Image (cartoon, rainbow, N blue to C red; front, side, top):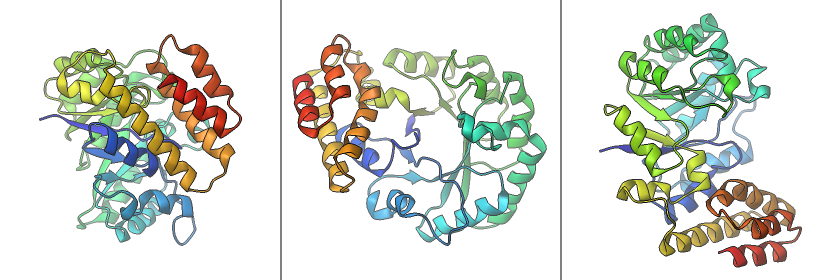
Length: 314
């Protein structure tokens, strides 16, 4: 049976989003936190702690993701996560953000192969015989897909829980199309289990990818779920992409859960609006032909204006 993961998106797929999605739609087999960057503080920040607290993630299989290029810092953060009971950690080698890449992190780390190898050697030596498992989310390289040949050789030296491959290079960001040929190379040559990630926005695309790679049994969905949270439900049913009435009701339930949970944080109306508009920048793609109402949502300056516009749409 295939398994499905929710990709981490910074600032969006926090515990509030994860819980609302899990209650309202077909549940994921794994959820991943937006990346944690090691810092010198004794513990996690209040924001980080809220996101990883087990009581905020009940019933979810949650994997914390770390972004680092220093083994000692990464190991300290793993140790902090162990205190909360986490036994699986994901390392981010795929974030394409320029601010991240400029610091040699995320997909930027893939340009420094000697350092990458040393980092992984230090991390795996550091976890030793503990029960902590390490997975990696990666891109193919920084500049050219062929960089992946050597990168995969490095990954193959380590016993990964799994290797999640987004088959683009850093400079692609989210443009161009995923390089399925190079992903196929990863499937054939990886010493570790492989998960596919990249541009699954429809049932048809999922079927296409799964038929191309019948040995791949795990799929990570990110922007496709944000824009169409009912997608996995239809994948399970092998259904069409048309919206059903019951799915619209679930979207309304999902929206209302997010809205109330953000308001409960006492973050202020302006921040609640910012968070909800950020969700609609993706979710609005599920409502073609409703640009007039979506514009009202984007332009709302008060919660009353916002809820009225959402009510008109849903």
